[in-house]
Image (spheres, rainbow, N blue to C red):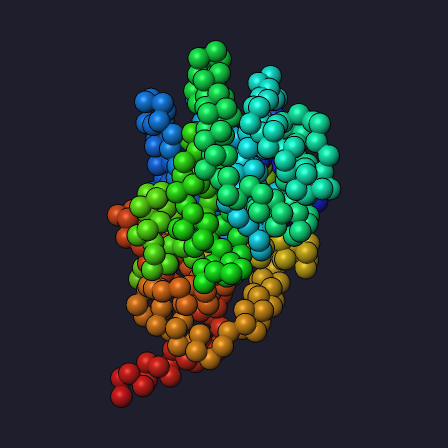
Length: 465
């Protein structure tokens, strides 16, 4: 760098918004300048695995169906958008969408998911001048209009889908009537979809357009509420992916579904694997080893991510320059001896305490920028950390502390009950090393609380005596 770039505080503030997912599929956008590839410190390339299965099945014109999961906020959507772009670059027609746009997460059924997928596929195909008007569904929509009574159809296939999915999301009554009408016809609907929608789309794409086949990526299904399904002794995720999962696995195209992380801890995981294969899991960015020794590579990439938000125009290998870091954080020295890492104590502490959870790191950073103007002080970070600790402590019951201490000792979590309390609340995170070994550990900000430190000393003294 010849002349040191100057920090733009307003752009930095916007770039650190933890609620915004990077849009990597938009070739005209600038989000790739913020993207950091964490594959080396997540254990393996999950996106490469998903992609290879799709590519392999495509060679024999066979559909594939895969599941993808991980903590909310760990970076799944960003990685799926990367998969979307890479597949499109290879000639696939990819339909990516966030299912929460069309589904009520508290009340979801199979037919809701199928209609949402069909709507997005039809809409995406229309944009490339493939217009589908399958007679089966035109007739079906007319019967649905009569059953729901609030709809009047003399519309196209796509217009009918748009209206049905819109009203179904907004009205519990419409959802109930829709399921009563279409639920018993699920098998026939699947058959018609596979022949007249997905099958026809694949034929047109592969034969006439000389492209590869259709890929559907359904994001945000991992946000489905883990509540019991009305009238059943089954939770929504169990009902959808274990009891009825065979329907979702039958689509005549390549599909990737995100699923709730709780299913990975279910005693019926084996049954899930029978329908879909083993779910692919995205672990945290590895900030420490299983023995809690700092992982320099993970820390380096997290530091790059923070500084790329501040100086997106600077090459990643130069963004940790002391002259740039000092514009974002007050100058302090950490004990780090690795030449590639920034030695700024505030940046190091922020990355370490995030536990490698990408959204939490951005949340802490964003809170600091909201609290004071850069360069950010050590006192500011400590204040934000204490506030975060207070929020965490409010939800923890006495029994939870015993479980947390056990995780700190054993590095593992098993069973749905512990998942509900420890993993779902982000009190415990999961990591994987390059050899494929996985382990759990307590969220570092929680581990640093006075309460946990006191508990650990008490337990340690008790065990020694």
